[in-house]
Length: 227
Image 1 (cartoon, rainbow, N blue to C red):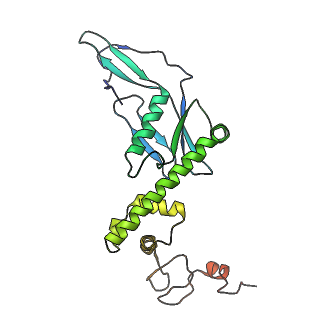
Image 2 (tube, rainbow, N blue to C red):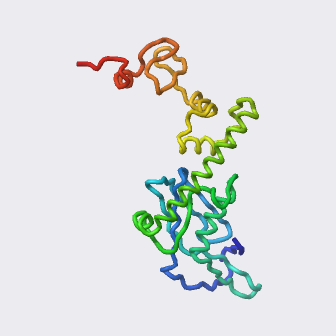
């Protein structure tokens, strides 16, 4: 984003009137929060909560400004950037920082003019929302393909699998990938009976054969419910 912020201290500033209607809404179906910081504008810190297909998150942004110094004896002049320009910068900068992004594959963000809530977005921009969800799915598939190739190329080294690829696999329901099974291995917990690691999704410890999760065992039909 163009411009340079000069903190008004000893110099006068010429401020522009702010249009209270200058608002834009960023919409996210991305499963992680987004933090964006721009040191050259004020305000320059933005936070978008994680969203989902069924429950998008939204962030309403207004205009931000930078100050131009036109001379030693002259006041600083505020140069405003409209809300749509700010929203565009936040979305574009983040998406362009990711790998495997193109016109049909990208993280799930878009922006629209005006201040809208989730219900209004889903009603007025349902087509754009569906297109954004599809683009994100395309991107997730790209990330999974990369992980498949890296897993094969590295002879099953889990260090070669990125957190982005693991997130994509979870969102697509591809937990059966070999490199995702390695993640489950890392998430094992200690058995309360013998201290060895066990998979929390199973009620019986493979090391000591104790039933360590009675409620889950009953749910799975391994134990009879208590009468």
